[in-house]
Length: 221
Image (cartoon, rainbow, N blue to C red; front, side, top):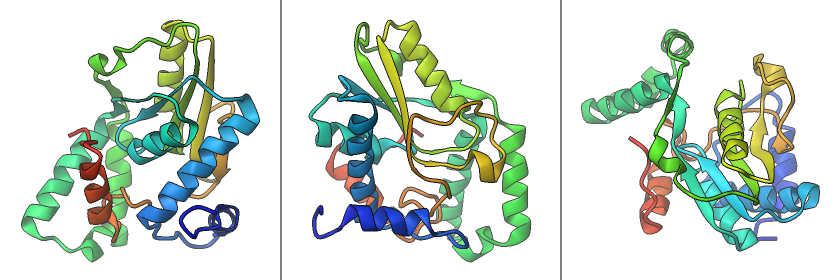
């Protein structure tokens, strides 16, 4: 139990949410991230460093590092479409466009097509400027769909001399969403995408941004 949350029961709630997505508060995202850290140790032993992907794994990476007492680093890798979505989100906030409009079926369909059209990876090379040679690296993300981004980071860790790389995520959706990852992550908690507090239209997003600001963790713009 963490801060009054029984995390095994909490994970079961998300694992069995087959027909709807849950709007995950920050406290529950923290609890699940702590559980993910423990599962990494159970599966692969304690890593030397945890490396997370911006922006979806900012909270999870920080919490895993804290839970395991190891250094935490963020690398900037994303689909090109994600950067454009960040710009559209800022425009939405500037124009006060309601979330209900964003969630209509036609807009969601166009958003999905847009992401597929701009699936090329974008990488900030300077974010990889840390040493992993000879280390056991845990690479974490919030949700794996195709696996391209997290596999790219895992490959980079191997190329930089990591002795071992463990891939972990809160969610792996390959079966349901038709991702192309040949093998699943080493560790995951559940199989359905949820409304994480860092999701663009989450009702908990402002609290999440405040959580980041309190820890001097700026999102990648």
